[in-house]
Image 1 (tube, rainbow, N blue to C red):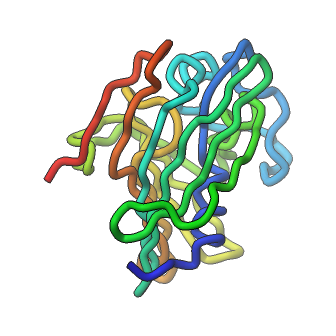
Image 2 (image 1 turned 180 degrees about the horizontal axis):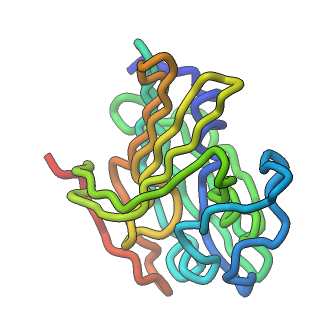
Length: 203
């Protein structure tokens, strides 16, 4: 497997990750994100902090495939720690055979930050009910479409109802061409304290 523009691809999705949870408020933050227009009106987030907290506990594991034109990268994300304020996630680059490449990159975020990564201004985003076949099966949830006029791109991301957290599928297009696609290929629940389901790839 060739290594993709890993840092760029990872950065594009990391801002969309809504990982684990704690006793953070379940309502979207009152203040809009920095990119929001003056009106401050935003779409509802796909999950509350409590719904995310219920599932993203230590041991939860995702395997994701990043694709951009001519390149591909695989990563494994594992929730390493969780406490009342936030969680730490290990981001591990994988080789073609699934073996780790180097050491994982561990990052920490608060629950409110993770939830609000999916908070988008109404002026440049919309959402609708959507169903899609994925490597985890047929999944239904909220499809968010977010335009970035300055960059000339549009990003679509599907947050599956029964899988709180990061989008199960995401694609960014520019000039009608897909420049980045990120897909959850495997998902395994935390061993304890989680209501998530064990999902294997569908061949």
